[in-house]
Amino acid sequence: MDLLTPVHIAPSEEKITRHHRLMLLGSCFAENIGERLEKFRFSVDINPFGTLYNPGSIAAAVSRLLDNKPFTRNDIFKEGNLWHSFLHHSRFSHTDADACLQHINARFSAAAESLRKTDLLVLTWGTAWVYIENESGKIVANCHKLPAARFTRRRLSVEEMREEWTSLLSHLFAVNPDIKLLLTVSPIRHLKDGAHGNRLSKAALLLFCDELMQRYPDRCRYFPAYEIVLDELRDYRFYDTDMVHPSAQAIEYVWERFSETFFDKETIALHREWEALSRASQHRPLTPDKEAYRRFVEQHILRLEEFHKKYPDFSVAEELAAARRIIEKSDSDEISYK
Image 1: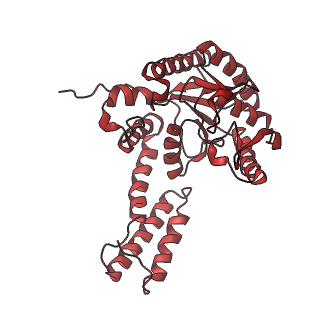
Image 2 (image 1 turned 90 degrees about the vertical axis):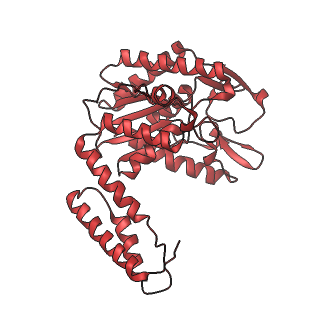
């Protein structure tokens, strides 16, 4: 009996390895995948502007990175006690203007350099609905809870997105001739747009992805994260308590499908080994048996060292240092028990 309708994904002929440099831009779903790539020591740059949702804001971010134009006082504004940027998530906001700019530009400079060396740019579109600041006429990435009267809300058309990104990608390919793109549509539903409005938005994004795929068949690949969650899992048990965001289990399932698609057998085997070691690194003693815990940590150190010998380019320095500190403290009362 079939209880699922699996989404078929052909294995990618071009595999992603930890030797590739990746940048991920887009919705928080991009961050979910990016965090897992980071965990396995991939070279990744995740959302240097913070979470971005619509193709217009993501295009503005990529364009700014390509122009390598740092932000100035004219690019931020004060509302209440905080300084904000319309192109950044609120995590960059600050009570001090200089501190706000310092944070923005430190992250920006690193990302501008990274984009020029990136092998794979992963773009996750969240919504085609945008907010346009009435005074400047520009799409904003974040309204920062300003009065709604300051903005006009509308949905981008497929044609608008295609025209903007066709021009932008010409610039990107000129700056980084070898870069490839991986396109995804976030499965997170934007119910503030209304159930029907969200469907229209996602449909526009899916058509937009298809147009880029047709225009740049050798440059673009599509990964069906949206279809996996909405069509294959299609059950509220795979959603978080807000019934909008995918649950941890759903995200892990999509990650598994991502791994099967883009990683070779050796990389998948490495990940399984590291997953077990990573869990062991998080282990804490349940009982006050110091000797037993010390032996466990000593064995863990040996396993980490063996893993590093097997995969010398995979850094385990942080985990080894933490384990050795535990050994140093094992004869004191500093070990905490749970």
